[in-house]
Amino acid sequence: MMLDTALCLERFAWHAGRHADLAVQSLALSSDPAYVSVRNRFSATLAETVTCSDEGAFITSWGYRLGTTEDVESAAARLAFLLAALPA
Image (cartoon, rainbow, N blue to C red):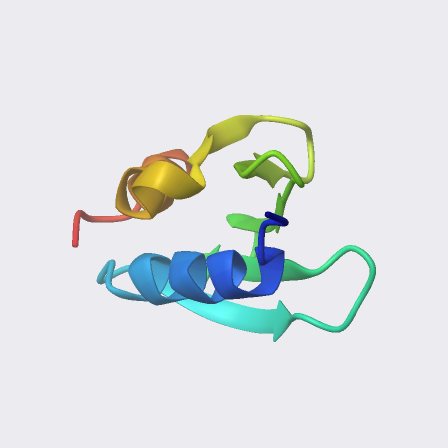
């Protein structure tokens, strides 16, 4: 069974958006690769683009593995930590 990376990124965006200090800038599901762009609401420079690998791992633009699709909430929390955001 093939992983639905678009659905996984939608779930990631939803969990990231629950963090008080994070804002989802864009969710590009039809691009190649699909990605979600998230930023700290209070900083123009604290932002990150996240993709989902075919193996089910959420990866930042600089190659950091945030977590897997098996625990999307924890992966989004790790991004929040990296972007200095408050917990959900």
